Amino acid sequence: MVAERVLVPYHLDEHRPDLDVPVPASTTVRAPLPADGTVWDRMAVLYDQVADVVADAVAPARSEPAAEPVLVQSADCTTSLGTVAGLQRAGVTPSVVWFDAHGDVQTPQTSASGYVGGMPVRILAGYGPELIATRLRLAAVPEERIVLVDARDLDPPEREYLESSAVRRVSVPALDASVLPDGPIYLHIDLDVVDSAQVPGLLFPVPGGPSLTEVAAAMRRVLDTGRVVAVGLACTWHDGHAAADVVRAALRLPWK
Image 1 (cartoon, rainbow, N blue to C red):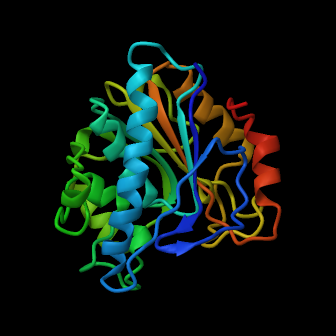
Image 2: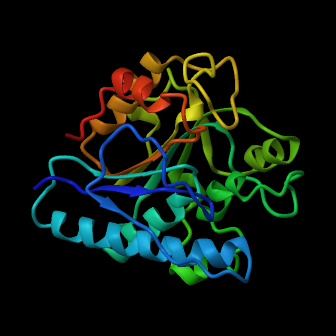
């Protein structure tokens, strides 16, 4: 069976109908979001739908393996909360391999900007379930089952947390089977992990990162384990820069 290719054309709770992504979607998730409440309230509505779509796509593959993992593309990293919740709803207990130029381990208390897109890894690890995890029925992923790849741009509170946590950090070139967590894997790739000189129009560009070729090779090493059940592509760029074309040509993504 062919895997589902899910598009979630949102940046947090902002609809991005023109979001350009590398792989054509087979399913697009849209939701009427409440006008009142917090950003967490609105994302909970959206990601509950994402979780249902992922669960429906993954459950049949448990008896009939898909040709590729389920793919979820969006404009930010918080969509991962819905994706991982969906895997769990399908009876999968995933580990997490997270490519990102940033740590994404902020909290509302530590973040100087308050940007909730910098918090999903911390929430996946169990922080603040009342924010959104409880509503998604999202169980915490143990820290020792999370591998953070690159994360070269960290604020002091993020460094402090990572130094004391069981989350493992590795560089893109050093990522191989020996450092991967056990079990099924949710592979998350925020495309700002790539050196900002190579991907045009990034929302939060960070120089000095790995090349597209290096990221593609590391991504392939994870996929080649055969344990990846879902992939999240965070297409964290502005519209109109043809970034998806650049990424599509370089990453050699397996989805047809």
